[in-house]
Every structure is written in C-alpha cells, then in structure tokens.
Amino acid sequence: MPPILSKVPETLLTRAWPDYALLDSGGGRKLERYGRHTVVRPEPQCWWVPHDAEAFEAADAVFDPDDEDEAGRWRFAGRALETFPLAWRDVRFTGRFTPFRHLAFFPEQAANWDWLGGRIRRLSRPKILNLFGYTGVASLACAAAGAEVTHVDASKKSVAWARENAELSGLSDHPIRWIVEDARKYVAREVRRGSKYQGIILDPPKYGRGPTGEVWRLFEDLPGLLKDCAALLAEDADFLLLNAYAARISGLSLAHLMAEATQNRAGRIDWGELALSEDGPDARAIGLSFFARWTA
Image (cartoon, rainbow, N blue to C red; front, side, top):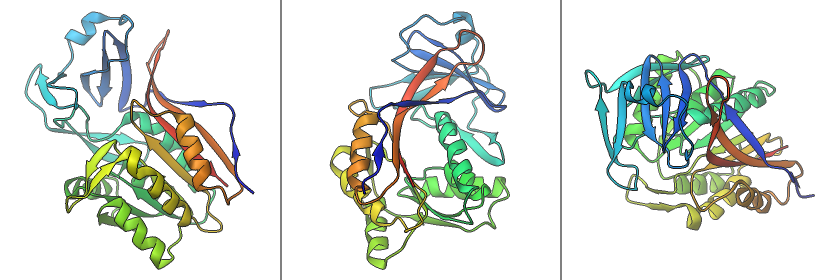
C-alpha cells in the first residue's frame, strides 16, 4: 500500500529564539541577530521595503557578495569576528563568519529540529542517519532527544566542527558516529550490509564534491540516493526527511520523488517550505528551502 500524499502544502515557520532572530527584511537584504551580533545578508526575494532601513546601517557585520555563487566577504563595523557561541535548546554550537554568506548553520532548519525532537522522543533510542550533516546541529538535536546517530558529510572540516559542537553541547559521550565520506558511497555500502535505520535525514546541496573528488549534482543524483535511503528504512522506521535548496525545485516535486521512493510503504507524505519569520508586529516571512517527509 503506497503512502498518502498530502494535497495541501505546509509552511514550517522558524520564529525567534534567544540566540537568533530575523529582525527585519527588505530591499534585497535581511537583518538578523545571532547571539549579540546583528548581521546583514543578501536575500534577493525580499522585494518589499524594510520596516527600519536605518537599523541595517547600524549592523555589526554585512556580507558583500562577489558573484552569484554566494561567495564574497564580510565587512565589520568594529573588530573583525571569526566565531561566536550560540545555542538552540540543549544544543551548543559555534557560529562562524564563512566566505559563503552562511554562518555555519541554517537558522530556518530550527523548525525541522523541533519536529525531529518530537518524533524521536516518542521512540526507544532509534538509529538515525543524517546525510550531508554539515556542522551537526541536526545530529545533536537528535542525540539530545535520545537517538543513536550516524552523521555523514564529505567535508573533513565540517565534521571536525560538528565534533567540536558535540563537545560544547556535552554530547561527546553520546552514541554518535562521525563519518567523512561521499553520501552516495556510504549509503550504497549500508544497503549492501543490510543496515537499517528508524529515521533518515537528507539535506543535500545543489552541487558539491566528495572527499576524493566525487561530484554531486542534485537533479542528477538525488533520485537514486533517495531510493537507496528508502531501502535502509527498518520495518519499524518512523520517518524519512528530505530538505533541498534550489531555485528550480519545489516542495511538490520533492513530495512526488519521495512517493516514488516509498511506494511500497504505508504512511503519509507531507511537503512544503521552510521559512524564517520576522520578530515583532507585522511580521513577514521568507521562504528559504523546500521539504518533503515520509512518516509511518
């Protein structure tokens, strides 16, 4: 029996928490607060007029893009910063001013972290696979909720940062395996081994390279990887969560791909987008990524 595909999209809103807030947006930019630092980053879809244009000029850090591939450099109002401490619930991690406008995590994913924690706390120490795990905040949210986690990323530096975040969170003694490998190779080997997981998370980039030069292209490689991930779901599996950032993609297209991969399983597929909501009255929201998730 195939899963039921939701006919209605869902918007998962991330709202302010103590160490993060979307303060304002408009004019192709967004003004955010990370800990005690205010930051301005480009956001072309913010076509509207900001509530307080002067607040953008008073920011502690502004990202000036070089090209369309998200590269550029940071301009600081005072002393240049490299890292700063952050927290989300029980998870502690380091924010970093990277050369690609990101700060070593994606705040809109907090909506997924909440959802993952709620699913995992219903289960008895489930095995979770997190692919393209980056700096590990999702892995640590799962571990804090009681999961045994396998974290996979092709970047040795990102996995090192994830391990540092585990130390900061007091989770280094939790059952987390840190794997530096191409996600497709790791999953294919797990399928051959007959490994099984109760939950799988995929957050792939549009384009990337593996540790030994493997090339990842979202539109060419995601269908096969998702099919292999479905093969890794245990009989008592609870979820398969897919998130993607790409201009040519939609939540509905991810949902149909998910439906094809899980066609032999009952359950439900929900889909939609993740968005950041401004803090305060007259709050607007910025849609930043799309998701589809199968649940038992």
